[in-house]
Amino acid sequence: MKTIESNPVSSASLPPPRGMRLPITLIGGLLALIAGLFLYAGGWLTPHVLTPSALTDTFEHVDGPHPGFRRNHAKGVCVTGFFESNGQGQSLSRALVFRPGRVPIVGRFALAGGQPYAIDTPTIVRSLALLFKQSDGEEWRTAMINIPVFLTNTPQDFTDFLVVSSPDPATKKVNSDALNAFLAKHPETVAARKLVGSHPFSSGFADSPYYGLNAFRFVNAMGEFTPVRWYVRPDQTFEAATSAGADKNYLFDALIRQIHAAPLRWHLILTVGQPGDPTAQAASAWPPDRRQIDAGTLTLDSIESEDTSPTRDINFDPLVLPDGISPSDDPLLSARSAAYSQSFTRREGERKDPSAISTEEVGK
Ligand code: HEM
Image (cartoon, rainbow, N blue to C red):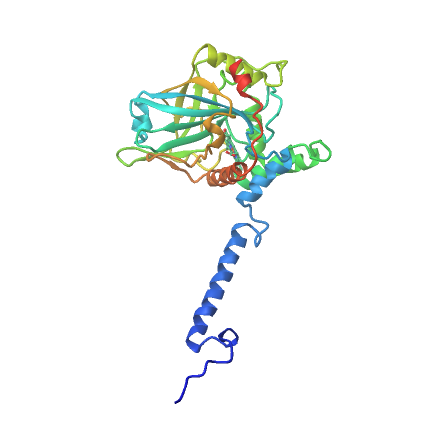
């Protein structure tokens, strides 16, 4: 009887049957494409292009490595409270946050720079980031600083400026030739520095305004778009900064004392742009006669160390926006969003050292 002999040659060493050759070539090609996309996304194929990683690396370069902390605005404290809308913002935006009533807020005061144990000084840039929680689950996140214009218009100029205006990590000195060469090419930065210099810093966190700086597009219930910028104006009486306090955390300690004594309040002011007002130039102010709408009051009545608070794990991404607020064409916005996400991803995966503003400091 004729039997079927088993094949003495292993099937692994045989070429694939003719019909399977194309799929294998295709799979190989796809794998190469995916690997190429990863290399591209990581910036390996285009080293001259500014990637989220490169933006974030710049902070690590100028401020040193500080695992577990934000790569910028590293020293901070958490605050909570609420926003009471008066309804005036509804003419510009259909976002629920502008309907009359209250929404809860989680916020964070911080110092600019990537050093989590920086010493408080009268002229260090200060910030206030806010997360408004709407009743429909949508959030509005904004991260504002206490200067009235940004110093550059583009992400590339921002990183270049950061490098030339920071002390060289090796010599601990600013390279004035490099700084002057940058300023010679960027009149908008020269003008912005002049404007910032003409606005004295306040004595503390509580008596300071904080500016959103980037322009956004508000959309109202009729579907009409308006360019808008916003800032918060303190109810606390402004006092110009003089000399530094004795303690390295004197700005934070004063804030803690003030919130423990009484709630702190700011008004949310919407500045209404007109056709032709630039929306992609954060280094330029709009004309001073632009209409301003007081949309309501922000009250902050509780303060907590980042060691125990929710803000450590929040990314105040400026593109987390509710329906009714949309981004403008400002190129800083997408760069900020990408860099914040990169910084967040790095810090979330790292060990956590205690905050300079500890639970004991906040409890004093
Ligand atoms: C291309 C420009 C910018 C880059 C690359 C950049 C980068 C960063 C990074 C990496 C962080 C840390 C994010 C995190 O780990 O959560 C940060 C935080 C922050 N940035 Fe920017 N930033 C830019 C522009 C601005 C502008 C224009 C403003 C002001 C309107 C601003 C205000 C803030 C504030 C307030 C924080 C702290 C937010 C918090 O407390 O969590 N930044 N920035």
